[in-house]
Length: 265
Image 1 (cartoon, helix red, strand yellow):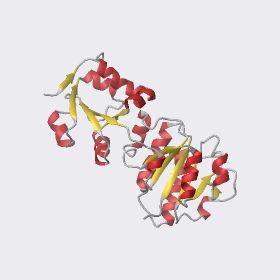
Image 2: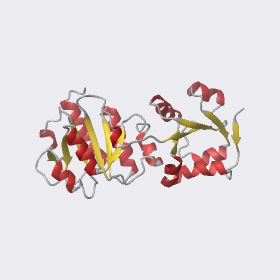
Image 3: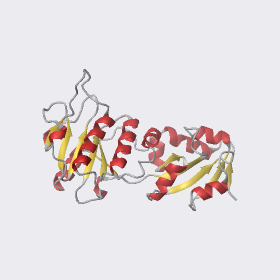
Image 4: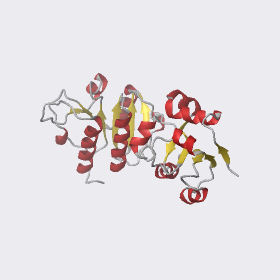
């Protein structure tokens, strides 16, 4: 018999709701929410630990839930009112997962290949940009996404939503700029840093060997440390009056140029 929650004033429900609002709450509990069957399935496939599944029987029956998600996780039946309070979207099939966060420490880094392609995003503040870059990283099947000096909680609901599940499929690591530079140099990975203060065009470089593509903030660009420690500072030519692209667009251009040079393998 499943546990049932019917009141939005229930202490446990209030705790779930805090996970949608407060980074501090997510860090203390080491948990976050996933909405939607597709996203939950991706998380399970990539070995994320689901603690509890909340489902609204007015939207999805327990039988359909069990057919969709083969998992022994505790299932909790919630009222429509509770589901509407916790869910951001109306199209998430009536199920929400309480999920454990992963350890993204840089010291645990592993690459998929012996010739890695990495994207590093520095001090990004907008959750939507992080999510969009994760989507591109998944599409290109790159080896790792590294976030330097993070300004936004990786488990911010807007990151989860905008990544469309790719937060679960990518290898993501977090560290400060100096330790990331040290790691890349120790592993003989060439650093190509996107910058407006250079004449080196991005498409004239060789990305066929192990390399990391560095993207800074939209307003300030890369930090001095990256500019001084890169193998090459590179730029995407701007032909109009605006001097920079959206962060995720710039990342996509660089990633797919590297992928093209590698014959999309």
